[in-house]
Image (cartoon, rainbow, N blue to C red; front, side):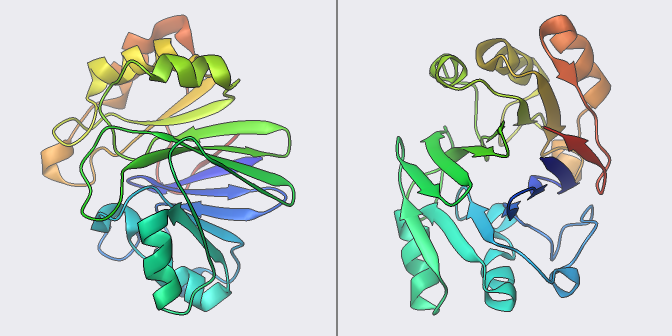
Length: 217
């Protein structure tokens, strides 16, 4: 599976399916693509309804015919706009052809529904995207329950984990590779990914991606 960091918390997964996670493109100064450039998508996953995560999800679904996957309330909103949607909730699994999407807990605010993280199994690889979250103890359970090949973790502080907390999250989750995200998009969330890499040390392979760059899971 190929994972591309689009910028902020937006990720594109390519394998048996093309999956976008939290596609905040319009208004994202780091975004390396736009809705106009997206011609194909199978699923668009939204971890929560804040503008910098829900982003262009509905527009991408409308353009490509992709299915919106999100917490129940976000899925209902998508359905009201005539989009294909699959609602789920914390602890649940959505098993579709050649992909499993597990919804796990996260600690963050949201206006509609509940903040969530997702664990995606596709092409024999397991990817974890927590959305926005602070550090919480049940990350240990996520790390015990899933054999995570690749994790994306926010490091920008202020609204999410900062570097110290994110490094502790790596200890809990035990991923093979980890990519920092949700930093340097705006001045208020500036962070140094090299400092994160230093704090993680030998716990995991830290892959620092510039927007538009990819890593294999």
